[in-house]
Image (cartoon, one colour):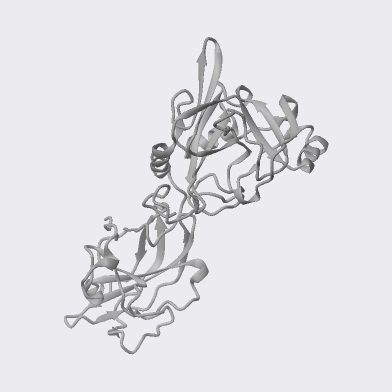
Length: 376
């Protein structure tokens, strides 16, 4: 049985000890801690007869929900009215769980059939390790609870964004993408030492590397997808790549058709900002049938290369023509090695603007433009 979302629990005017939102709610009551200690004013009594949950199982994990079930002895099982679920981020499991009695700290569920779905985007984040323990409880006529001992502590990790969540991000990005501008080259800025190393140690071919953790915390490509970052943005007045870069004074330029053509697939990867007015969209270009293509096909929304709001490749009079979105900064990941002989390396004349670097940049969780109603 699925437990309803808890979106309004914190705003309820009802007294915390009486508040149960359908099947599941947050209550600002001081429950026994996992060592069996309880506050003097907790209003909770001990009752040894209530069965202690054991053999806890977590399943159907998403970025903002999971199913939980457990076993328990049949003794006094019919007296159970509620379950207390103690959910904490793993890194905080040793911290004081009762900082203030008015701060909700526990999930309280009516005793519904198991497994039970726990869902709530404002207390579950993607890619985050949690600990969970369970008590059984019986609510008395005077509002007090009798409780069992805590179960064992179980650890689990929430999942990445699914394609459904990424499609929501995609739709939000489309709203602000702006008109399309023509371009002809992809480019990659690095320090001179990077290109020297590629020539000396990798046979002149730039190698894919694992994407860092910049962008949305729930992005399935962060820390997993291997690729090479390219840019394609152009200056409005010249139609050419800007002369400034945050990544290095040397630039590799390659004709767009070498990386993006009918033999490649295009995927949407992420949409984010870094507490700034401008936004970034991450796209992935993968040769058809490549390992990168298989990775993306399972996890990312695929875009129509000829018709989308961010990056297009169309044919006009037998020639491939390319356009990019004007009002977002595109970060393009190419999933295969790229030989330097396919393009040119030259020093740029502008500045190295380190403040614009997105390396391991964290997404602004408060931005209404680029966040969706799941964990950030």
